[in-house]
Image 1 (tube, rainbow, N blue to C red):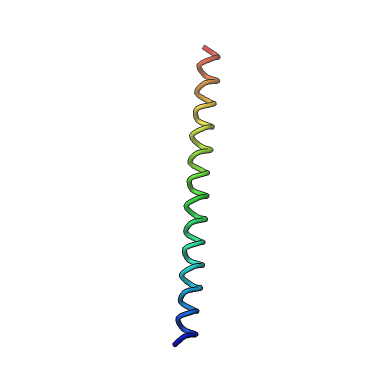
Image 2: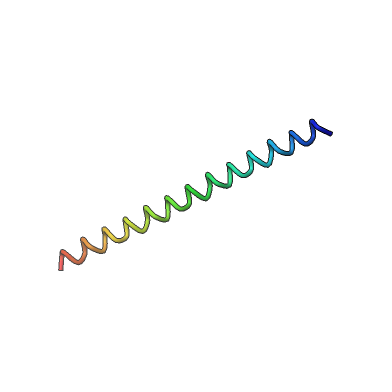
Length: 48
């Protein structure tokens, strides 16, 4: 039972780390898209 508990703990830790990494990447992509959109909007405003 102890080995099973350690296996479950390791799997839970790996799953948590994976979800944390995925959420971090998604937030970075959204932030990059937001900054890129703002920069393109500013460029269009300067052209006018």
